[in-house]
Amino acid sequence: MSTSTQTRNEPASGLEQKQSAAPSAVQSGPSFRRGDAMNYQAWIAKAAKQPMVLETVDLGPLGVEDVEVAVEYCGLCHSDLSALNNDWGNSQYPAILGHEVTGRVTAVGPNAKGLTVGQRVGVGWSSGSCMHCHQCMSGHHHLCPQVQPTIFGHRGGFATHIRAHWAWAIPIPEKLNFADAGPLLCGGITVFAPLAMYAKPTDRVGIIGIGGLGHMAVKFAAAYGCDVTAFTSSERTFDDAKRFGANHVVLSKDSAAIKTLGGSFDLLISTVNVTLDWDALIGTLAPNGRLHVVGVVLEPIPVAAFSLIMGQRSVSGSPTGSPVAIETMLDFASRHNIAPQTEHFPMSQINEAFARLEAGKARYRIVLDADF
Ligand SMILES: [Zn+2]
Ligand SMILES: [Zn+2]
Image (tube, rainbow, N blue to C red; front, side, top):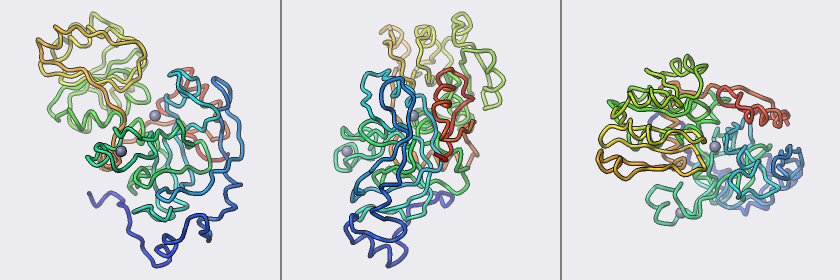
C-alpha cells in the first residue's frame, strides 16, 4: 500500500480500545450517544417517481462490525435515478438513496477493524458483504452472493448519517479533493476496474458514452497511458472529451464512421444505457479485443458467434469492485490528480438535482453538499 494513501489505523489509544470492548448500545461519549438516533435526517423516496421528502429516521443500534459516517457530500449516480423510478423493477419503498458518500467516521462498532472516529472515508455502491464466502475470502467481496447494495435493503447516503461494514468504508487519501471524491466510489471504480483487469498502457481503448461514468473512464484510461477514443452521442461533448484526455472522438450513432475503425480496439468500455449499433462496435475490436459493459442497457446486446470466434474476441461485464480495488483506484486517482467534473447542489435541493440528471443536463456528475 502506498504511503500516499491514508491507511486504516490501528486503535490509537487505550480509550478507543476500551470503547471497542463495550457493547455498542451502551457506549457513551460525544461520538456515540443513544439519543443521537433522533437527530438523523434523510431524504426518503416514498414511491416510484415521486419527489423525496425530508424526514427524521431512527437507524437503531450500530451493528457490531459497522461504522457510522456523518455524510458531508454524496454524489448523485444514474443508478439512484433508476432506483427512484423503479427502472429495474426491484425498488422497494420507502428508500434512502445515495451511494457515493464522503464523510467522517462518527462511531465504530465494537468489532469493527481499522477505522477511527474522525477519519475521512467513502462509501460506495456496496455497504457490506459476508466476509467468509469463497468470493470474500478471495478478495472479490463485490461478487459475494450476500453483498449488500447501499441503496437496496439498506439506508443510503442522502442522509445526515450512513452506516456500513468497516471493510466497505474506504479511507480517502489526503491529496484527493474530499468534496469531489464521492463519484469515484461508484462511478470511478466501475470504470477503473475493467481498465485494471484488462488494459495495458500500450492498448487502444474506446470509451462509449461520455457522461457521468464515461468522462471518468476517459481520464483514467488517458492517465494509464492508453490511446483513447471517446464515442459520444453529441458533437457538443467533443471538446470536453478531448479535454478529459481522449485522443480521438467519434459520434456513437455514426455507424459509417464506426465501421472505418474496424479491428482497432483492444478494449471497449460501454457506459451507456441505450441501444447502439453493437454489431458495428464489436467489429471495431482487434483480435483478442473485448467489449466490456458497465452501463445498464436493458435491451439484450445481440452478438454474432462468428464475430467473436474469428477474432477471438470477448464480451464481458463487471459491477464496481472490491474494497482493495476501490482503495487502489483512489490511490491512482490521487497520484494522477483525477477527479470527476462536478456540479454541486445543496442536499436541500435534492429533487431539483434529480430533475437535472433526468433531463440529461448534468455536466458531468452531480454532488450534493450536506446542508439538509
Ligand atoms: Zn452508482
Ligand atoms: Zn461473501
